[in-house]
Length: 145
Ligand code: CA2
Image (cartoon, rainbow, N blue to C red):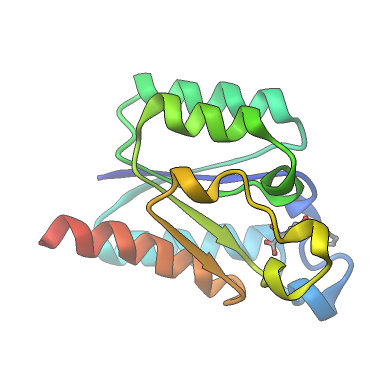
């Protein structure tokens, strides 16, 4: 099984600022955490991070052609603004899980809208970096059934 993990704008700044909201671990820590878990589960995993909406749309479309079985996506700020990212996920039809490190529903009102929520199989929020592991388990457990 091949899983693609997509992270949106500023997630590359993890651990650098706002530790009270996003913790002290870095983007590299996130990648290593997921790689370790994926290795234990025998899953092939790839990572993509971009600060650009169109680049994220391009990567989602590419997943349609490169044999990706599942997408884990934290669209970050684009969660609350991007019809394009939601449309791309819908267009490729690859089972997807939305992950948020914090719980956007418990923060400012403008974070309560998610354009991707209706096109993903599951949303994991407020569980820190471990939310990505939960998302991975969603795919591996689904496979076993
Ligand atoms: O909780 C999440 O994972 C978010 O998707 C993170 C986004 C935010 O816009 C969403 O509402 C919720 C922001 C990511 C910014 O990441 C930073 C990391 C370190 C320092 C500053 C920002």
